[in-house]
Length: 114
Length: 111
Image 1 (cartoon, rainbow over the protein chains, first blue to last red):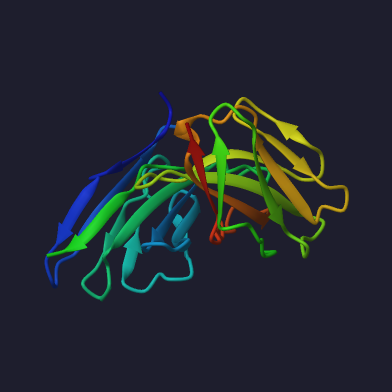
Image 2 (image 1 turned 90 degrees about the vertical axis):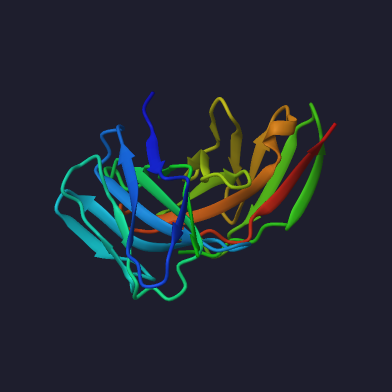
């Protein structure tokens, strides 16, 4: 089935450690997004990419990095510079064409600090 | 993006229609109305979207008022699995525009 796969589902990070969250889609979508959700809150955009080898910062990019080397993959690295990384991380994708196409989400990765 | 206002919570009896309202009085002409829902600890699920005409798909119907200042999401026969937080979002065209999720409506479907 086509969809968005995020892994792992749960991730623990030690202080000072970088961790990478995986996001893969087989929907042939051009655009991909990373959001962060804190308890009881809405989603905040971290980074997005409209095409391979190009990406832009969202509202809360500090302490995060991304790459887009392949159309189907958009990994997110949470660096040690992110001082409050505990959150639910959501990856989404859309066709990127027509502007009004909806974003479709994966099931998320829950990151916690040890 | 225009702001939206939704009631914080609603109840619905199983098998009945659930009508979820959304106000977006400052919506502009090129902004679409999207509905998503989020079940606890899962990613948001896209439900439906529209510009000015009413829309229907296998999950729900979307009714947009003629002045586009409000809309209603209708789940025709609610089931217990429809219990979730429902988000109404308005968004300008453009792949780079993020989705701004407000507080949403927590729908509780009861047996």
